[in-house]
Length: 198
Image 1 (cartoon, one colour):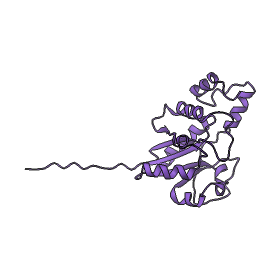
Image 2 (tube, rainbow, N blue to C red):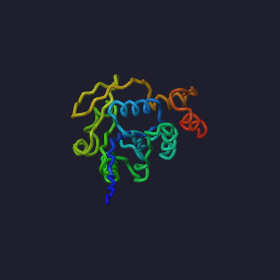
Image 3 (tube, rainbow, N blue to C red):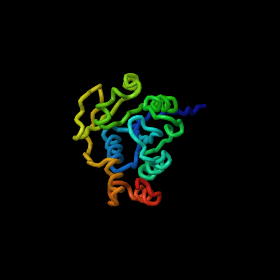
């Protein structure tokens, strides 16, 4: 008599973390996430909107609105997922706290923090940056306007250069100009319906 034994194989994932205010999320964020996923063979990208950003102003747009817009921007990509970890945690959002929380939830997976070269150049100002470097692999997307000055054993990534930013989009809205093609249609509709950035 033969006994059939089932072999259970654990699937370890490589997950990218893309944090930020997403105020609002734009096509540059989506392009960065997609290129990081494909070029580094990541299984999934977690978008994590901050609650209170440590280095930026919130511009009177709630974390709730920023979370909703990020959900709308990413919902057509099965590899993108938006988490509200930092919003639920409350207070000022620090990357080291988020990384440690994720590693507890997903202990078998490998995480990659995705940042632009502008943020990487100021990495030493981040909370517990020395420990953060030991706990997670850091991917730096090169931006022409911000040459990378500090190496820090980063994984450097060349991506399509998109010369737009959330602040540029907010400025257009205040002036009454169109933001079509800079954000997803659903995000554009959300901004209009909720009268954001006026």
